[in-house]
Length: 255
Image 1: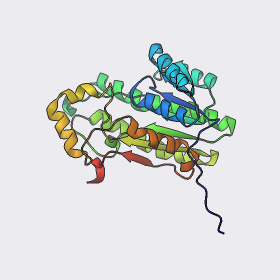
Image 2 (image 1 turned 90 degrees about the horizontal axis):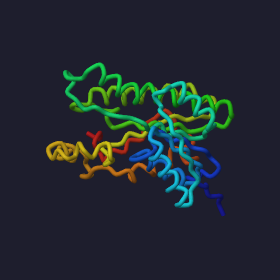
Image 3 (image 1 turned 60 degrees about the vertical axis):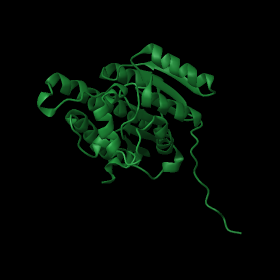
């Protein structure tokens, strides 16, 4: 008889997770996936009713979850709230926004709205969580919600591409700085996902057709398409994975 290798597994029992932008869309799916795998999940967002309802739904489904009303752009308040609620073993750094416009029409207000949330807030949320991980000497996994637009360009996406390419660089640098503490940093890079934020864009049939022409698998992504990737990067199954991007794009970037 030979001793067969055993999978490290995908369970997250006993681990505490923070998900930002967790009231709906990708953030809600991330929280549900982590809770289903056994993690205690703190759902953070600005809208109390959304995270309270989402956390209650997770509890009703047999998971453990708590809401946290939090504006990640208020750096000092966010840091204090994360310290009070933590430490966390897992972060899904998901809060984000987009303002699609031709490059020549982007205003400085547009720039601040997108970069302050997608990059600055993400940076300092990750920093606060990582500091808690280091103090707890627990290691951990930090997952940034990037985009395929952090790997390619896109029309009317200059701000979004700038923020998501920057997030890729940030994650790689974090991976190097945090490796000695057993903390991993990675991104998930989805294609266009059907969510409340993106749905209005797809009412434009020309835009929808142009997107579907580039997704080789021929359909928009769903939040369920990301749940496995989130659990994988949070779990012991990805223990040697850091400083990289898991691209979930239906083949968009393959050519």
